[in-house]
Amino acid sequence: MKLAILSCGPNSYSTRRLKEAALERNYDVKVLNTLKFAIDLEEGSPDLYYRQKQLSHYDAVLPRIGASITYYGTAVVRQFEEMGVFCANTSNGITNSRDKLRSLQILSRHHIGIPRTTFVSDKKDVLPAIERVGGAPVVIKLIEGTQGIGVLLADTVKAAESIIELLQSQKQNVLIQKFVAESRGKDIRAFVVGDRVVAAMRRVAQGQEFRSNVHRGGVAEAVELSDEYTETAVRAAQILGLRIAGVDMLESSQGPQIMEVNSSPGLEGIEKCTALDIAGAIVEYIAARVDFPDIDIRQRLTVSRGYGVSEILIREGSNFDGKTVTETRLRDSDINVLTLYRGSTVIPNPRNDRTLQANDRLLCFGKLDAMRDLLPPKSQRRRQPKIKDLNPSAAA
Image (tube, rainbow, N blue to C red; front, side):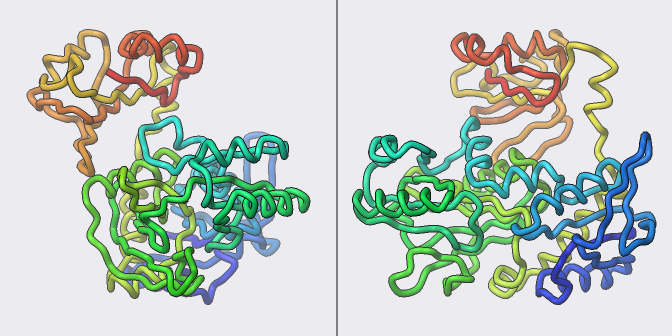
């Protein structure tokens, strides 16, 4: 395998460890500065030049795109995608995660915990927004802040108003978010690679600081996650379109609450804390995907109109709860079950005699009209126009 690591910091801990891990496994690896690419566009022939020379062939790309170069960095990743090169994180996934508002908007339509959040522009909307998230104290966040920068805690409504007014006067977009008191000064970082969490740590703030980021002086300790937290982390990464991600969660009384999903998570803190070879897990995952690539479902969809992919949630007490795959009679409706997700367990091509349970999720391929019929009446009326040929959501 020939691997390119896109990074503007070749001497950073994460980049060095990833390169070392690839070399230890006898892979050909190069660290390429993201800003040194030129993107060439021609009919039927997308191409890349690196330092004024045509780029040689690579089997895979591992993007490490910093927040300050998101636009150009994702353009380079997108060009690799158009050239048919496997990208460990896609340009869409990076874009989705980099904007806090955008990522929460995407997550909010799924059954996954997030702190109540609001986004306003008019000053008259600030007070009602604070009330809707539960009142003071509230957390105020810059939409594109990283490593705890641009995250403020306002203890009173008056303080929150002043902070928001000041930031908006500087043309800054801010989120107003519910303060989860029981998790004050601590959070969970789960490191997701593919469909599993390979490491996790709890970060605890020091002194009066409420932000637990290691860059802000937080102390980390290794932690073993429950199935609920593991499943939440993996699903959040997958929903945003990321294969490799650092998922930050708050430990609330209602369960895990997604705070942020990072598309270029740092390795230093979590590797030293857990003593695990996370860089190696990333490289091995990429190599496996290069050797055994996924079928491009989008190409299959162009063969037959009216067919698509849908995720079906098995609700407690529903018609499918307690039945085997055969007894659901999905196949009779021209719906094929591709994958069964149960907690943190992924079961490809489940057997026909496997019994389904409440909260199982089925990834299915079949007739869109048939899958649309599985929607509850209220959701069906509201969401029917939004069902597309790829990844509509359904519930049974």
